[in-house]
Length: 242
Image (cartoon, rainbow, N blue to C red; front, side, top):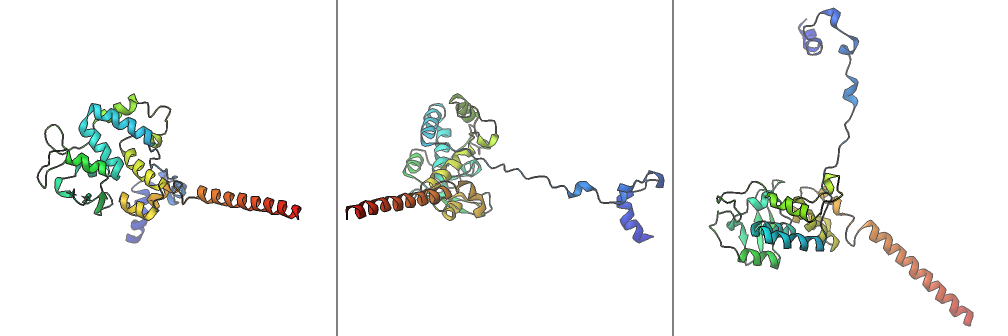
């Protein structure tokens, strides 16, 4: 009887026999249904002209938000990583930023552009463990100022975008960094390391950009076909002269 209770009770509980239905003794058909996974990764990234426009307007409204945005665009750092950045994490001479305990659980290094280095040099340095960016009370920032969202709205950068994955938010700056690198021919493994991804799968969204892409491969094939075709035409013309 004890064995029966082990598998009967979880199914029918203490219901009377007359309330038990056939489905109670069968596995629910719904368990076989698999809810399709939705790819929620953001796909929007900014053009160089959009970035220049955005930074120009942010600089007029909030110097700190401008600096944080510049940092994300030039290094690919996440908002949380920027919030946690302390002066001890940086080496201005070597132009590196040590990102401790990133989202993937790993430490990594971000590399400063000349613009980022100049930005840090214009700030008043703090102690080793002092946050580089703070709120108005001098505490660690916990979220991006709504000035960013208002600026995006004023610049109409999200006009017509219904899908949230295609909307410009602060996180889009990080993806802009990755997209620009991919367009410049950076290989996906290097991109993975710079972005702090745990696997190469995360870099797939950038695989259509740059020189080493399927589109570039097809374009290269067409170039070869055109070259061969042109060579044949020249050869035929030379033969006729003979």
